[in-house]
Image (cartoon, rainbow, N blue to C red; front, side, top):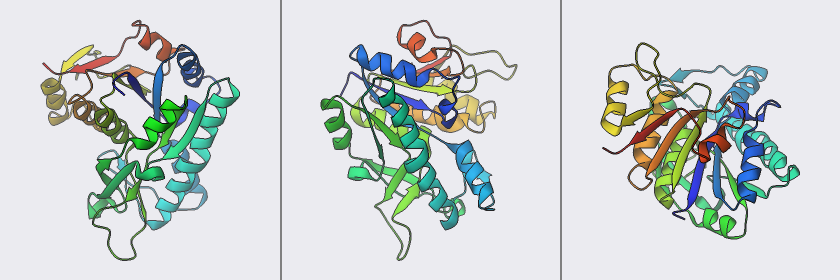
Length: 261
């Protein structure tokens, strides 16, 4: 498992202009072992709007009541996951879609009552990933966790978990070779907007504390910091560039590297 590359992609990757899934197929054909974790926040918001369910974010994370959780689970573990898997398989790759619930892969508890049914990850059981990788598949993981710890009576069996955090926890649990975030910005920038190509863990923490890194970048940085315990390379790169993932693997990408000093 120390040769596995964990890749986090956003829901926007489903766009016809994006080459990420094509790159995943090519990398698999080259013999790379990949685990893909996907988000889908924009698609969830669209479906919540269709259902007239209000959306609220706190510190870059979606507050999730029961009605929202039903939509989150349906969109992430259903529609989004299966569309990604379908594209990979129809493009000549081999992928199987699972959620954190399957095989008790991701186990969590409620993180903060203010956030509703949003989970903090307590445990990762990588057995399902190992089995799929050994069988020659790319596991495509939807960020819904089993509500396995401290579950109140009548509380849902599942929790919404941040996909960035899921990617970091999986990378740490399996001792991945590399963790790559494909995002919609060039990387991490300083307060003047200049791209920072390399950051120590302490420097990354300082950017959060100073408010320079904010919103959705915070869980990405925290996931990188978590993964660094076992994963030597963590990267945040611009997934909007054509064949950004292939370029990253070939050492041609820009973006930001977070590393232990």
